[in-house]
Image (cartoon, rainbow, N blue to C red; front, side, top):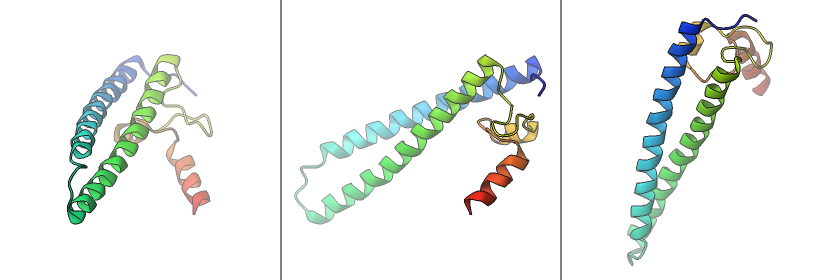
Length: 121
């Protein structure tokens, strides 16, 4: 388990921060959308109320997903600070760089990720 090269660590930290900002903005937009839909709850037509509830459920699903994604990004950023970023949480080996490029919040190396997926089936 070798520490990540400083230049690579800076690269991934920037990538994570960019993603963090994107998700934060998206959460803000979604919260605004929910607030606007809440303001239309006085609509009397049943079909319109049903449509509004469907829209709220749809947005709430995105909010839940984005909140979870934000936690994953925060965890990865913490790992960049404590020196464990890029280390597989399961086996302790280095996570492949191409995997981190594709999924900067990755917590497992390819081998362990595949094993975990098999176990969940």
